Image 1: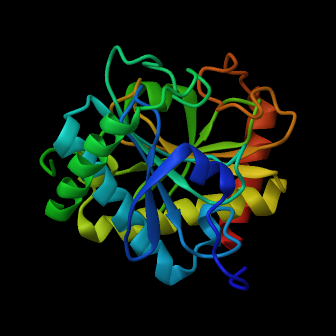
Image 2: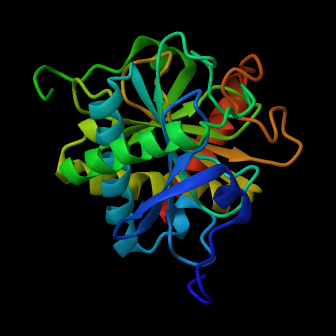
Length: 139
Length: 139
């Protein structure tokens, strides 16, 4: 489980833009302008499930989920934050933290599979990434 | 946030069967025979989002998610465990922990909204509840 070297899954790397690294996780911005959408990927090799996290990493995981959630709340004032570790498509353990709005393209259903991904475009992606990084610094 | 008395949301109470209470959460079995499906509801009044959990409750939350996940893994040997706090329909904070199988009625999509709920029936519900309680005792 803890053998080997962490390598970010190719699909996560392809769909997301890496914003920063926290104590445990890489923090990605999902390149989907439909929803403000972060993905946390604990940088531990061989993780698949929540219960694979070492006891010492469980606290960091919940802290980082709360931090991502607070950042989205602060920046976007959404109606709801969705938090999910699914992994039906990408086996590497990762946690989605998504700001949801009544009336967004998937509301009130889940976002996964609801809409084709809508890339930001270079300028909008850079702007959003900068805003998120500034918000992380404050929470 | 911490004022008032905890009262389990009526819809959660109606769709689920209460199995036990852990240090933080009520543990419900979702009455849906499509998937082995637990719901953890932290017994704190006024919680809506993951980041509403008090720092002292975050560790208990992640411990209890891991425990529910281990129990489903041990009992059902699923292909994947899905963990999610959505709340787009029920505002009271609650965490789904669902055992997923390649080929289950929603695979590889998310379970929420995929299929009408399929109640167990009295005998099957009692049997599943007993198996889960026995498994909780061991993990």
